[in-house]
Length: 389
Image (tube, rainbow, N blue to C red; front, side, top):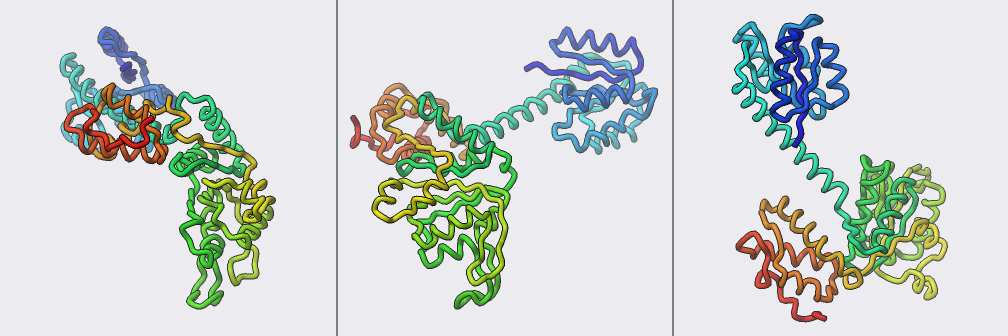
């Protein structure tokens, strides 16, 4: 790992000699002779570690400690001075200094201090990498061209905040893709509000979606905000929208077209700005023919239509998905499983996966729990003898 060290000192001989020494140790080095120069370099975010003199021509060096407290990634700061002041050292350490060294500098002490600071920088980089991985890779497109196309369209839909309809069998990752759309667009810092239309009784679904006013029905003692209002500015995920009754479909269509709705028992319009992502594991086109789903709502939802393949049709992606689930479970469960044996992977590749990605995820989690070493082997897997083909 390449690290950049900023040396802030107005004594040219000391600064140049220190820069040369650090360069021979493999570090990238930047020099500054004033506080102002140091500030300009820190603003650019290119310094990983700072060696900071206390007395500088334009001010008191430790002031940088206070100025950098609001930085997202504050570099470790090692104070260097020719004036050995214990009180100042204690105060500096309390305010975030990584270490305190006095001149003349012993290079072996300096190197040890930099090594300790490097460990902090490395840890921060790894945490940032893990956070980015969790944020950006929760949906694994894999190698399948159709799935890569789905991911590309999902990103475009996220950027434009248009309505999206996601279809696919149960367990193919429809909600995971919906969350990916939310996290990939301008609404990422706004609410993601999911509702499973199949899990809520028809008599309660309207109130859950649009809320209600006091006295709207028996038991409605005070105003309740609906999920569409809660999701204002963000994304409302309508899972299993095929279960939504026709009368509520009509009200949802009107709310989408007018970007407004009335609470149950209310008279005033409530304005909202919501991106709708809907999902279904049923054939909505056939439901339209059968009179069970509104055609106008169907076309209003599918501005972008994303279909997720069943896992049996994208088996080339299983190895990448397995690696993803192992990494995910390692972080969540505090485990250290590294791999899968070839014979175990062969069974995973041959299995039919009727439960799709959800079943694969559950199988890997179970295998990790029963794995005695760092590699998942055939005995660790659940019985996949049925559906092998």
